[in-house]
Amino acid sequence: MAVGVIPLSEWVKSYDCSAITIAVVASHSSLQILHGARQEGFRTLGICVGEERRKMYSAFPGAEPDEWLVLDDYKQLMDYAEYLRERNVIMIPHGSLVEYLGPKLFQELEVPTFGNRNILEWEGSRERQRIWLESGGCEMPKVIDDPKDIDGPVIVKYAGAKGGRGYFVARNFRDFRRNVDLEEEFTIQEYVLGTRYYFQFFFDPIPDDGYQVEGMGNHSNQSLGRLELMSIDRRDEANVDEFYKLGSLRDLRDMGLEPSFVVTGNTPAVLRESLLPQAFKLGEGAVAASMELEGGGKGMIGPFCLETIVTDQLEFRVFEVSARIVAGSNVAIGGSPYSDINEPGISTGQRVSRCIKKAIEKDRLLEVLS
Ligand code: AMP
Image 1 (spheres, rainbow, N blue to C red):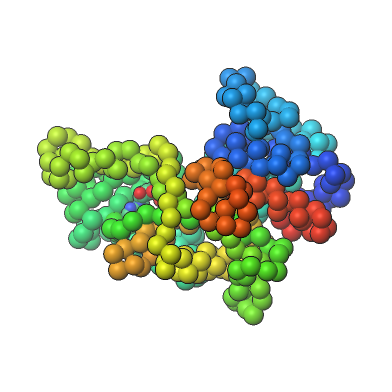
Image 2 (cartoon, rainbow, N blue to C red):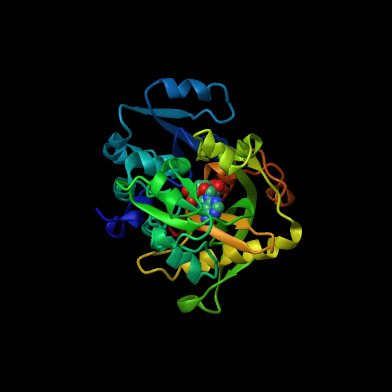
C-alpha cells in the first residue's frame, strides 16, 4: 500500500494516547531514542534480530526497552504491523530501519511512524537531493558529468554505498580510470577542500516561537515552525583522516594505498559562532524547500542532518541531506553545547519524544506522523 493511502488517521484514532509505546530498531541511534522516550514518560519497545543484540542493552539500563520484539529477519516486521498498532506504537525511523527494510517496505509499513515518509523519495537520490537543496538556497559541490572533464580533485561516489565505502579521490582522468568500478553507478563531485561540519537540526512544525522557518513558494509569508540546532559532529573516516601521516598522495600511491571514506565513528564539533547564522539559513532553506517538493507531502519533520564543508573563504557547501535522525547525533546523547543552552542534557532522541508528547497534548499528533 502506498503511503498516500495508508489510513494513518484511522489508526491513530484508535490509539490510546495515554499509553503510547515508542518503538525502534535496536541499532544506529536507538540508545538515545529509547532513553529519551523513557525520559518523556513513554513505554518503549526494542526490535531486533536474534537474542544477541539484546545483551548490549542490559549494559545501559537507562535505555533498556520495556519490551522486545525479537525477529528472525527485519522484513518480518511487515507482518507485525497489527501487533504493534495494538500496543499504540509509534515507530521512530533511523537509517538502519530504512536499510534493513529497504525504502519500499519502509514506506509500506502499516504502523504510525514519526516524521514524513514521503520525503524519502527526495532523500533517496542524489539528483533529487540537489533539486531540493538548491531550491532552498544551499550551494552544493559541482558535478562532473564526463570523467574526461576532470581537471582538479574530485570525489567519486557510488550509489547506495554505505558509510562512504568504495569512494575514492581522483585528480585527473587517469586516476579515475585506474580506480573506477564501471559496474557500479557513480557520481563525480568536485572535491571541496575545507572543514566538514554535520549539522543535526530539528524542525518542529507545532511551536510558534523560537527560530521560525519562513515559508517559500506556496507557503510564502507563512511561519512554518521552529528550527533548532541540536548538535554538530564530524565523522571519523578510515583511512582518509590519518593519511597525511604517511606522506603525500604520491608517496601513498607508490605504496599502493588509496584514501577511503569509511565511517567508523563521530566526534563532537562546534562551529565558529559568526558562521551560525549561515548554518541556520541553510537549515531553514532545506525545511522551507521541502514543503514545496512535488509529492513531498508535509515536508521535513523532526530531526535532519545537513552535511557541509566550510571553505577557507568561509563559504558553505552542502553535499548531502539526511531526512531523519543520523548516527552523528550520538555525540550528543547527553546533550551538546547547543542543546544544553535550551535544556541541559536533552538528546535528539529525547527531542523526538518531546515533540510527540507536545503534539499529543495539543491534539495535533497526526501532523508529526506518517
Ligand atoms: P557522503 O556519502 O556523501 O556522506 O560522503 C562521505 C564522505 O566523503 C564525507 O563524510 C566526506 O568526508 C567526503 N565527501 C563527500 N563529498 C565530498 C566533497 N564534495 N568534497 C570533499 N569531501 C567529500
